[in-house]
Amino acid sequence: MKIIFIRHGKTLGNLEKRYIGRTDEPLSHIGRNELFEVQYHDCDIVIASPMKRCQETAQMLYPSKKIVTCDGLEECDFGDFEGKSYLELSGNPEYQKWIDSGGKLPFPNGESPEAFKGRCITAFEKAVEKYSDCAVISFVVHGGTIMAVLEKYAVPKRNYYDFQVKNGHGYITEFDGGKITILEQI
Image (cartoon, rainbow, N blue to C red; front, side):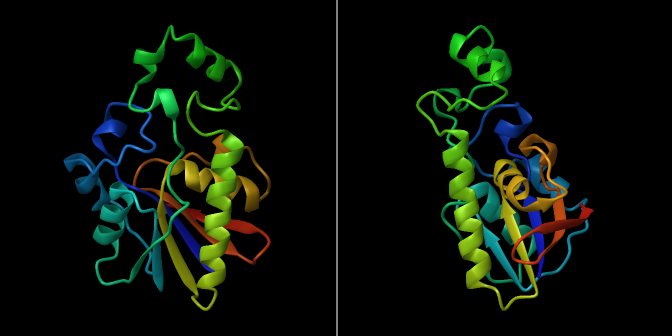
């Protein structure tokens, strides 16, 4: 089956380079306009994170398709870093520890990388199993969600951060049930 992964359009928090995980922001005007600049592929069904930014992106990109909301695909809970920018966090000892760990420590009062990745992978697997009769599924989700799934399934194997993608962009892939082959970046 083909799977299209699309990161939601830009929000105000994205434009301000803030950690926006559980904050339920809508798309910004700029984010909405940028979505018209990219050519998106058709699909049989759209699966989206319940967050406003993903729901709005899915509705804009696929106005005539059924959009299925899937819990578990939400972005990471950034805990004490939520809503803050790198500049606002510079000098914060907890933030420096997290940076020094290469992003491997849990966010203070937030999610651990393992819990976040596990949640996203489980939700992805359930959705793919439920809609296994579809030839093409489009997932409209968060950057971290895409990175978590591709780190687990993409071949050749790469690091989580190697799968970063800009807002409104993503990957067209082939999934055989055990591995994901990236066919094209959008």
